[in-house]
Length: 284
Image (cartoon, rainbow, N blue to C red; front, side):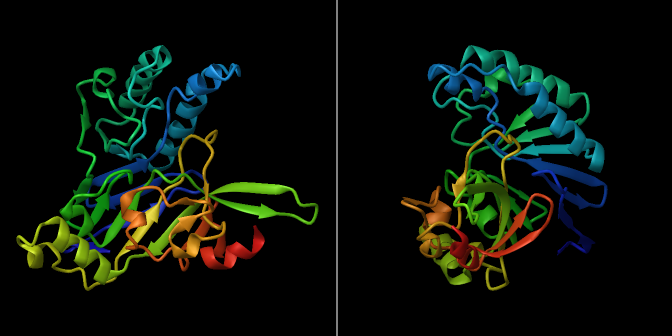
């Protein structure tokens, strides 16, 4: 991948659910779906789990030590509750940012659907972007996935999103169900991207917005940093047609048909290639 004469390096940090981007002196670590405060949901159901923030921080610190980034991008759902802020989040979210800012000088947040009222919990040094995402170097588009990405993000050669919590589901010979978090790498359909760019720009400068969309575009769907979360089994019936099990793929971008889900490549967190989504449907 190249931009303006300088090479962009993009690689997962195995065995962690994290991506590392490097261009010139910029070293960027990307993680998603932390869901700090998720324990509150269990408490409301009568299941009391102590705060898991220390474990989440430890996992992130291990990742940071591996790639030594000078910028951290949180790709949405930093906190867990929707439409409110729980007492546990008032405690844990500021503590999280204070710890991480001591290790990484710059933190950006691309907010997800769980990040309402996140700003009062964050230090002023943390930059919170708009939900439509951000574009790096004109080549890499980052968005959470619950809302439409911006036109500049859609036009990027590589798209990185979260929100789905992708997992694969298997059944062994004893009919036990096994679920594992995964990376998903899929191809975008240029004609669909061009149509959406034109439609969402209302015909204004649509040719400029779709410039370069003839080239091959890829989308990477990130697994969550929080290992306690459930996920969407991408290999259940219907995923070939853009549906997962009985429900639709989460988010307007995936629902639009822009992504070829059936042929998407699936990898475990340690980098093991499992096959395509279509192939893995046979093991559910």
